[in-house]
Length: 242
Image (tube, rainbow, N blue to C red; front, side, top):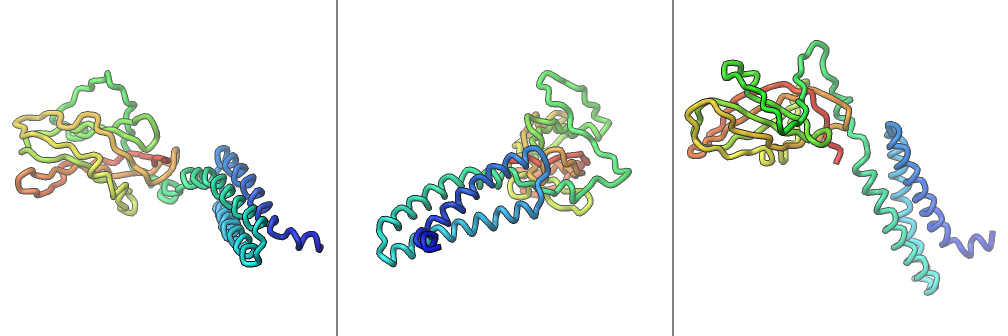
């Protein structure tokens, strides 16, 4: 017991080492199965304890003028923080979103499916069928999409997207979708393709957790800045796991 008390400052370091192992095991676990919120919260709390305990240990040693031990504990703290940085950043990216599971597609709701992205395909568009005006394509990862948009005569301005989850009308990727999907158009006098393969992202949700999204196409007049919705279409989407 005396020896344990003498080297008490090593205990936070050992705890930190165990936390590194636990983080690595957790990273492997969430790759093969859906992680539990309880497990995720427990890991987060333990990491917080480690990050608090380590600085306290070397500060106490420093106050008691145990310079070598304090220096050793300080270096250990820096090392642990650097090593934990990788699993922490990984957990932040890989933690399940749950948005798709919380917003299942209602029974009977008809959803369009994004097409497979093929730069060589040129599907004919009938100007009479407004359902074909907007075409959404899958891109290189789930949650990353491209869109084509066809429309009749319009003054010069901007065309962009707004998306909403269908059941609760929740805006999707609200902070950047409009800007990332925006395309400046010249004045047109006939039915034409105004947008071709413009990429956009939907962040809410995880890969494979599908839900229904209302994709709206908006137009902003280049002179008056007035906005109006041109078209909307419901698609089955998934979120991009950044």
